[in-house]
Amino acid sequence: MLTSLSVFGVMAKAEGASFVIDFEALRNDSAGLTNEGASYSEDGFTLVTSNPNNSNFFSVNAQDTPRYQGSVSFFDNNVNGEATLTKDDGSAFDLLSIDLDQLNTTGGAPVNFTGTKADSSTVNQSFTLDGVGVTDDSTRGFQTFNFTGFDNLLSVSWIQQAPFHHFDNITLSASNSLTTPEPSLVLGIISFGVLGFLGKSKK
Image (cartoon, rainbow, N blue to C red; front, side):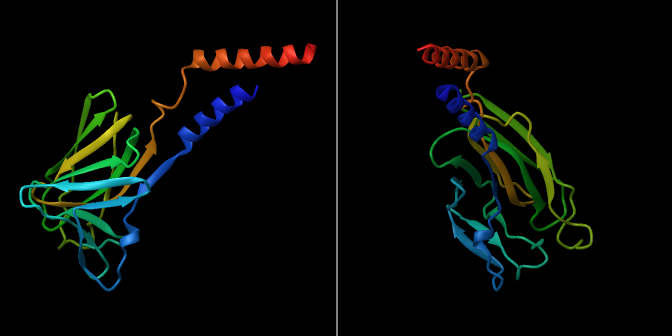
């Protein structure tokens, strides 16, 4: 029975592991825009940027009004800069949602995400912002976008296109695809454990 119980322990762990990358470790209430370099790590994940001009990520802090929306956010400081997110241990993950907002001006340009899965297949999804710019303080703010099919990923990438965006609250979970056993395997292990237990009881 110990064998079967250990399997269910793995399943429960896989389904319960979730993460929100919120950049709050970068909070600096006396700063506005802060250069954070070409990579950033949080909760076992790392974001890196690659672009023609070797530019970096910047964080948006409290003194950078009106971009600041109550929490620290992040953006790639280069036109066509590509941000890529991976898990530090190389394992697969599921991307659930992200908060996006216009960085500077009005405009609803789409933000296109490409996920690469563990089997080397790719999945794509595009989100269009509401177009409310920094001058419209009464109505602007982050929008939460939910992903569909972005499971069992090894990486996800997106590009900084005009009119630019910043992002916050990247919600992820550990992928169940590589850790959850097939039902037939679970039943087989349970049966094996039960038979072993009964055999010991008879002795």
